[in-house]
Image 1 (tube, rainbow, N blue to C red):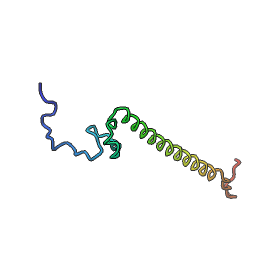
Image 2 (image 1 turned 90 degrees about the vertical axis):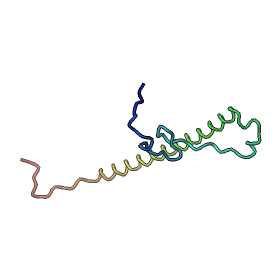
Image 3 (image 1 turned 120 degrees about the horizontal axis):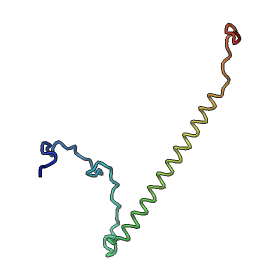
Image 4 (image 1 turned 45 degrees about the vertical axis):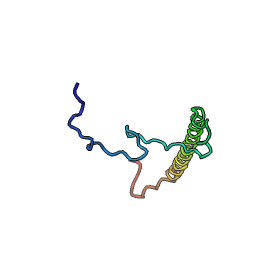
Length: 101
């Protein structure tokens, strides 16, 4: 078997910053734990990690939805202001322009 890209060197790959996975997708920071939880024998249980991750996910979802609602309301307000500006009276034609043939 041959290697897929034997001409590329490891230096050719772009350096990934902190918080970015190997696929280039940003990763969330780890969930912090307190000193009391580190001493607790059950602190490393999968159930506690699952609950903490679920709480964090619910918080992020709430923030995301609040931002989406705010952006929607701003867009609706902007559209209403644009419609009000468009609905002003059209300028009248000068006397030299006749609309009849």
